[in-house]
Length: 137
Image (cartoon, rainbow, N blue to C red; front, side, top):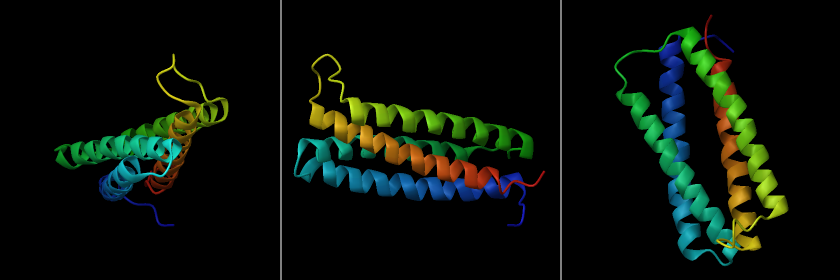
């Protein structure tokens, strides 16, 4: 893979994050409203929420007037990758252990929420590591 300048990588990442976020909002909303089980509706709700946050981050990046440096973008993406691993682990814990959060959700809903966090974390991990590896030193 050819190394690219940081502003180009940031622009590509922003576009891809916006596409992922938009798809997550759309698919998540459909599942949240029409899912056939509490787990699927919870998965949809969690997915739509993460998608909205992804869209907001992509929008903020697009509106930024200062282009990132290779060092700052690389550092940001590798820190995010570490956080993504934490999201995956947390989502897996919720999906497997099915905590009720003080009775606010059911075990089925915990499964849906946790699984969605794993999916979102894995997608973000792929985006962050892929784009971090594209940056020219």
